[in-house]
Length: 81
Figure 1 (cartoon, one colour):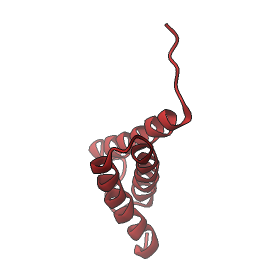
Figure 2: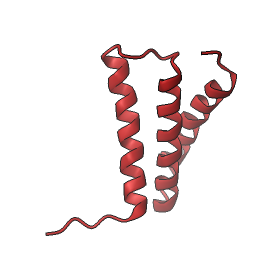
Figure 3: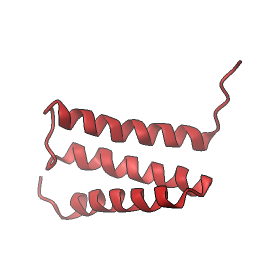
C-alpha cells in the first residue's frame, strides 16, 4: 500500500511537527517561553494547523489554533527579545 498524501495533509503534518518541536525544546530547556524561536515555531504551527483545520472543517481545531497563532504573533510584534 502506497501512502497518498495531499498538500493539505502535508501542511497539517508540518504544523503539528513544529508545535511538537516547540514543546520538546521547552521540555528539554533548550529554549524558554520568552524566546523568539518559541514564538516563531508556535506562530507558524498555528497558521499551518488553521489552514489544515479550515480545509477539513474541524472548527474547534481552527478556533484553538487561531488563538494559539494569535498569541504568538502578538508576542512577535510586541515583545523585545
